[in-house]
Length: 358
Picture 1 (spheres, rainbow, N blue to C red):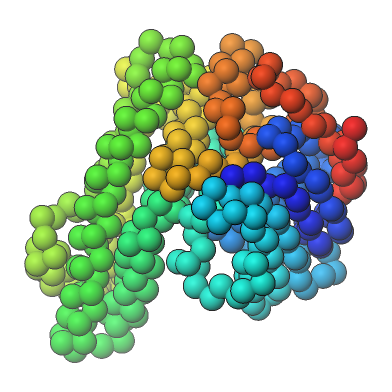
Picture 2: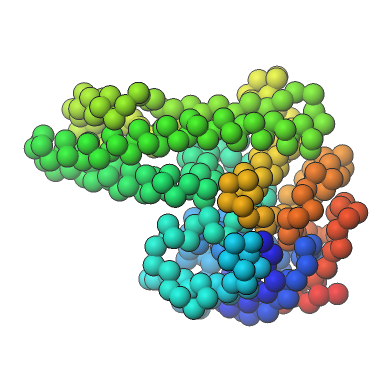
């Protein structure tokens, strides 16, 4: 997949830009606060209609505006030449592919895979379980429509069960939600258990090639309560009903799951050096990109937002050696310092939301 053209209107500090992105390698060069990261963020929106930098949509609007628009022209392995347009206001989102309105996110997610690499990725290792679940949920939802559907239904049903626990003691009403919750809980745990093995296998190989470290990383899925069937989950939720009613919410289930990364020395979060942790995060994103390529049959776009400046020279050079040449890379930084001798870079000077190719 190659993004050949992009236009952005009223996004962050970008009033308007019109970018010819033909070619495999682009570098946005600027001091901080000029709009280079906002550009990459806008490009990343095409993957799942969300920012990779924040959970708040409100902060994405340019000051004193109520809507932003993003336009993309793409060469796609499956769809050919495609045009995608997003119109996002404070109360609605409109998505069009080749002029046709797409109403369901499930019909869109995974079509245009983009892999962002940025400093906040460290939160996948060092943040809360919510951060890790978010990363793996987005990854699995992009490659598996059934997973995406199960995830959405699970969280909707979880919300309804929690509401019902607070307002009624009618066992039949609560049980109806528990039947649905058990169905989707079992599906999620089963799919997470299967996919994490595949991701770990890719991660081990990528990390070894990229980092030159002797130790090999391990990735373990830590299910909150892995049960063998839907019926087992029904029994579990029935037994937990009174406790959950007292607590006011469902205490156990896939919404409490976690993932653990470790190296030979121990947990990556607890014992990994800063360089090892950053290297592991970069390897994880490269593994995600390879998984997208393998399952979706589409070369994802890599967005490299300043993160390589935080790597030591050896790891930085190893990254460019390992980075697949068939992937389009759009990078940013305060100075042009990249490897990749086989890449023909287009350099963009960015200043106050304006972009000029040199």
